[in-house]
Length: 86
Image: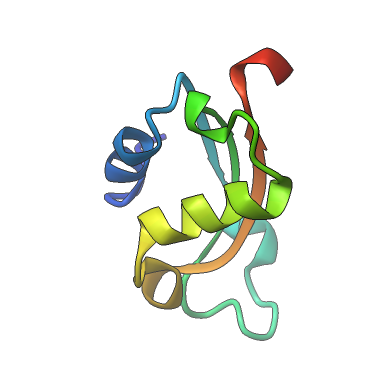
């Protein structure tokens, strides 16, 4: 599977040591609201997450994404881990 164009810049911005992105859009085909943007599951390990709460980690990810969620992502399931949690 090829990654969406926003995945590599996100991986670089997060300094990710592990970056596993699953496009789960096909499982949501036909659902209300699923016409625009994809459904994704992201498992990312980054030293930038060390010492941060889950909310702070998610904010860091969404800050790195910028305006993309509204344009290309309908749903994003996140698992953000520090290296010692992997």
